[in-house]
Length: 297
Image (tube, rainbow, N blue to C red; front, side):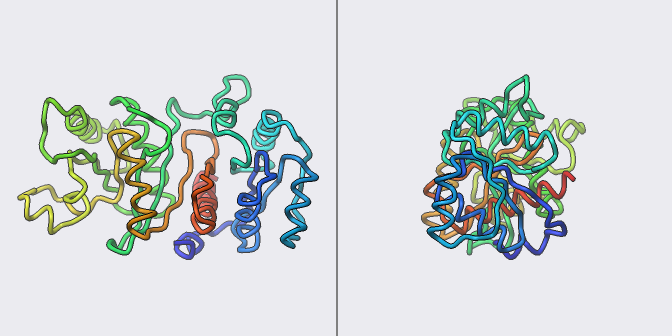
C-alpha cells in the first residue's frame, strides 16, 4: 500500500506536529516517513527522552524538537504550530486520545472544522483488486442519520485524496433489504435520498447492502440484487462502532490486509495510531495524511 500512496504524492513539503513524541513506535514511524521523503516532523515532548530514543536507534535526520514535558501543553503547542502554518498534520504520540481530542475540539483554540469528527480508514486485502475506504470503527459509537451524513462526507474527502473514481458509498447492514426493525436499513434509504437530492455530494450512495453483495458482484447476482453499484462499492459506511472496529481488526489479523487511518473533521488530518498497529500501517497512516493534506492545500 505504501508504494500506491507514495506514487500519488506530488508535494513533499508536509510537516507533522507530533504531540508527546517521546515514544519509540511513533518516532520510528516519523523517522521512516522522513527517510522516505513523505513528510518531515516537529517533535513536541520531553526533549531528553526524545533525543535518547533517537540516539539509541541512530535516527539522526535532524528533527526539530520542542521541549514540553506536560501532555496537555504539548498538544496545545502542536495545535499552535498548525494555526501558525508551521505544520499541516497532527499526530498523537504518548498521550491519551481523549487528551488530544479535547484540545482539538476546543472552541477557543482548537482545530474542529466539522460538527462530527470521524475515524476514516483505507485498506487493501488480497481478495480485492482495489483500495477500500471504511468508517467508523474508532470514534462514533452509534451515529444517527445526520452524523452518518457527515461521516460520508469525510469518507469522500479521503476517497478523493486516494483518487477513487467514482466514489461508491455502500451503507452496510446485516441485510440488503429494508427492515423497519433495523434502523441501519432505514438510514440507508434516507442517505440515498439525501445523495440524490444533492445534500451529500461527489459520490454515489446506495444501500442497504450486506458486506458480501457490497463488494462481490458474484454474491450480488446470487441474491438477485439489481443495483448497478452492487459488488462495486469502494466506501463502506458501518452502522456502529462495533461493526467498524470488528471489520478493521478482521482485515488486519485474519485477512492479512494493510490499513491506514486518520481522524477527519478537523482543519488538518490527525494521525491516531494504536500500539497494536504494525510499523507498516503507521507509516501508511502518515502517507495517507500527507495525501489528504496535499489535496486540501
